[in-house]
Amino acid sequence: MTALHWKLVIDAGDPHAQATFWAAALGYLEEDNSAHIQRLLDLGALPPDLTVTVSDRLAFRDLIAVRHPDDPYEEQTGIGLGRRILFQRVPEKKTVKNRLHLDVHAAQGTRDAEVERLESLGASVYRRVEEPSGTWVVMQDPEGNEFCVQ
Image (cartoon, rainbow, N blue to C red; front, side, top):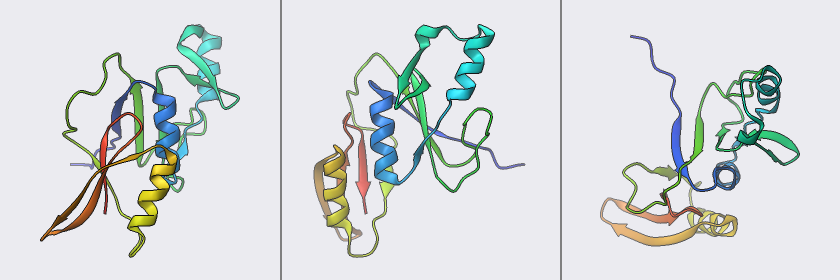
């Protein structure tokens, strides 16, 4: 069996704000799909009301992804071919604890500084955990999704 290509999809109220936060948090790049979107608009395959202009470029209104800067991507579409997180707009708000979350690993001895940096980007500390197996900080992104800083 060949390994499968995958991406993590996160539901969001404001996918573009979430992408901006997570790109800054992880050092990722927001995907630039503007050439692909323009091609779809020119073909009549995408209605203009499903697009927005973000940072002076065309974007899908309800979807945007961030990708690792070292990973390959399709030049024609801007779609990443490696580590990616896709944010998709949904109408409902988050109501319960995540069943899946990211663990962010800070460099040795820098966890507190990393937590402060993430707070400056819009995250908040949910709780600090000290257990025999280790210590970490549970945080929430701007829409309340939990993630851990190790």
